[in-house]
Image (cartoon, rainbow, N blue to C red; front, side, top):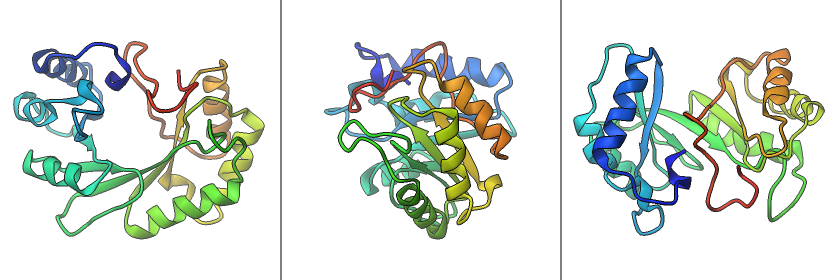
Amino acid sequence: GLQNEKQPIEVADKVRLVDDLSAAGLGYIEVGSFVSPKWVPQMAGSAEVFAQIQRKAGVTYAALTPNLKGFEGALEAGVREVAVFAAASRANDIRVRGYVSCVLGCPYDGAIDPKQVASVAAELFAMGCYEVSLGDTIGTGTPGATRRLIETVALQIPRENLAGHFHDTYGQALANIYASLLEGVSVFDSSVAGLGGCPYAKGAS
């Protein structure tokens, strides 16, 4: 969620945040993004953050890598799990998690056909992603639409390999999480302390 903060964030502050989350008992932490600091200045210094955090046994410290250059940077930093948007690689013995954005509505295209989401998700799964996170990036999803989406995607991917990612733009995030639980999805992305949103998707609070 740091990418939506208005000011740059010091490496030391990011390290302390990650270490505090480790101490709090979280088992999976997405530490940073290997993206261009020109476009997302808040994510600058991710390699330094990975070098300085106190890694706890049994905790997964992942990184977002939206392109090959980012993946290579994460590899150099010793990252052992990456999250991707559209491509996956298993040649380096790294676990890969896939994200599909705007699954219940898009700021550019409006309503999204669940079959289209299923198609993209199935490609990520076939590429080797162990889990695919379905993201309601702009928060327009409703519980009914969420259940229909999961029913459609689950025709191609086992439910235990799906996760949910819900923004609370219209106060529907918890209701959508509950609807997902009813459909057998039990993994959900969350942000820390009210951080979050997306600077590139209008409405992603």
